[in-house]
Image (cartoon, rainbow, N blue to C red; front, side, top):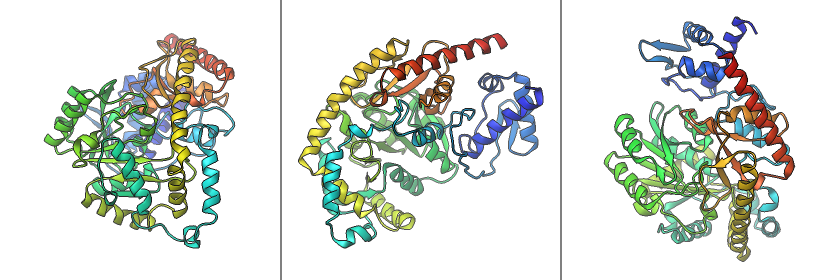
Length: 472
C-alpha cells in the first residue's frame, strides 16, 4: 500500500467516525501517535490525513491542543449491511454484527439470552389468550401513558427493590432505548455534556451522539464510579446528565456499593446533576443491591427499565419512573413522536406473562442456570488466558482481561471471519483506553467449537501485535 492510499484510509476512518457520531462537533480527534498505532501507519501519514481533512473544512487544528471536529453538524449515517471486517470498532459495530448474525450460531458478544433460555411456554400461552382479546387490543393505538394494570405491576416490582412509586408516576414506553431517547429529548440540547461510565453500554454512546451532545467519561470500579474522578468531572465539565447502571453494570457486571451510592447522590445534589439509572438487568440479581432511585426518592434520579432481557425482545415494552412533572412532559413527547404509548398487544402480552405464576419460578431457575454458566465460562476462558475483571453477583456478562499485549478489536475481527461475534473493550470505552478487555455473554458461549475459534482469533491477534512491533 503506497503512502497516498494509506492517507486515504486514515481519512476514510475519520470521516466514518464523524458521520456515525463516534466523533461529535467540537470533540478532539485521537492524538497523532495514538491514531497511528490504531491504524498501523506512520505518524507522518496521520499528519498528512489530518491536514487534508482540515483543508476540506471537516476538522480544524488548535495550536497546542490538537485537531478537533468542526462545529458543523454532520448527518448521522449508518454503514452498509454485511460483515464489516475493516470498519472501525464504533458503538454500532457490535449491535450490527449481533443483530445480523445467523440466529442459530452462538454470539458471545451479543446482549441477550438464547431463545431456549426465555419463557417461551408462558409466551405461547399469553399469545393464545391475546388471540381472544377484544378487537381494540388488536387494532387500536396504545394509550398515552400505558395501561394502568401493567403500571401497577411495575410499581409492585419496584417496591420490592426499595423504590416506592405510585403507578401515575410510571410511563410505559416502546423499549428501554425509547425511554432514554425520550428523556434526552426532554432534558438535553445539542452541545450539552453528558457523563457516562468508562466502560459503559455501547448503545448509550450511539444514542447520545445521535442527540449531538458531548460525552465525558468517568472510570468505573468494582464499587461504582471512581468518586475522585466523578467529583472532578462534575467540577470541570458541568454535565447535565449522568447515565449509569447501578446493579450488574453493563459491561463489567459490577454492583454499586451503598457508600458510593450515597456519595454520588451528594455530589449530584451539589452540582444540580440529573441521573438516569438504567436497571434493565434488575431481575437477574440474587438479592437487590443499593439503588440511586430508591435512595433519592426520584427527586433527581430517573429510573428506566424494560422486559427485553427477561421476557422477549420481539414484543418490546419499557418504562420510566420519575417526578410527576417530568412524567407529564414525557407523555406529551411520546404522543408527539409515537402517537401513543407502546402497542396494546405488547403491553397485554407483557402483563399476561409477568402475572403468570410460572414467571417467578422461571426467573429463579434462570438465575441458577446463569450461575453455572458463569462458572463454566470462567474455566473455559481461563484455559485460553482470558480472566474476569471481577466475578459478578448475577447476570450474564463477564468483563474479561485478554492476554497481555492483545487488542480486542484484532481478536473480534479475526473471530468474525469465522462468524463468531465478540464484543471488544474499546467499543464500550468513550476514552478508547480499554483495548485489552472483552465482554462475554456466558449464555451464548456455545460448545467447544467456540473455544477453538477463540483460540485461533487470539493467535491471529498475537501475530498482528508482532507485526506492529516489528513495524515500529
